[in-house]
Image (spheres, rainbow, N blue to C red):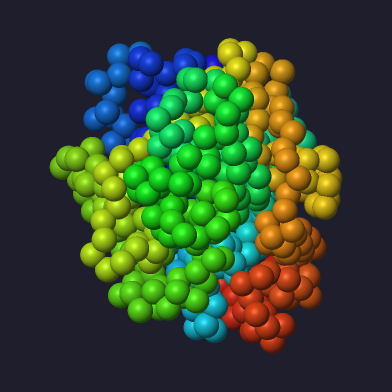
Length: 443
């Protein structure tokens, strides 16, 4: 079986290698093909993998290429994790918004919309190549903004593309553990939302909802990073556990102030770190990568924590997107059912949203595909966030595909974290000015 990684020179690719090469991997990969536009980045990542490989006697053969057609030929699974515009583009996403007093973050708010504008055209072209060269391949999308990108790719690939994120399933597992149970106990849960905007609303074991017990216990909530981020009183008031990215909606003013007061944005931190990692020769590539990875994970969402507050060790070292991708591949390939939270077609799950839009919900996955399960009705409070964000997402897809400055303006204005039509206009103009690719697209 062949797995192709689009963005094969990405910093976190060795984590995918570790997941698929381990003796406990739930399905075997014969070839891991790394596709990237940069030979230099591929060479650095290959050097890390070469150091890892002696620890994995059953590891797949690793190939690398800058030819997209060659990469897709014969692929059974395609895993996409690219950053169009690199970390330099991310810095522009962040700073352009912050200069106007609104949130500058990679996937949430105006920064996420700007990221989508330059990413959607590339990903739709990629989808067309996959459909032509490897029409039977399953596409697992982690390219951000994952919900928007998955929705755009679905227009070409339909149900063969599925969006993943590690935060929702991680939240569910933390809640189950805090309740003193295990996912192996036959857990059924209710999770609903969009990518980076969702809520865990129930966690049932043996027909009993354990979430009220978790919400009522300070000791239990202390074990859940999302509860610590947003406060025990707030999650109790909600009666649900929010995805960690809802911090940017619930505490928008505080997030903007914290990011603006920091010495560097997250993008600037990663740009310095990755520029150093990829540009300097490494006597010990694996050790250098491990040090950089720990610094990266430890500083994740630092703006949401008090100065000097450290992430809990289990949150730094816990499983990530690579395990979600492997679990999804294994269920589709072997037919052994898996319970997951995925970005899939809405249909009638949330009737207030378009049927062909993408939502993030609990699913059962097996050899026949991905099967979302029914959810409880969505409250007005939650729908009040989902609906305008979904409207902004769909407008930004249309803007990217049509090259429309006006649709881009409407997308920014529709987003609940942009509080002025005039600011929305200035955002679009600012991104067009600072990002030549967007200036050409939205001409």
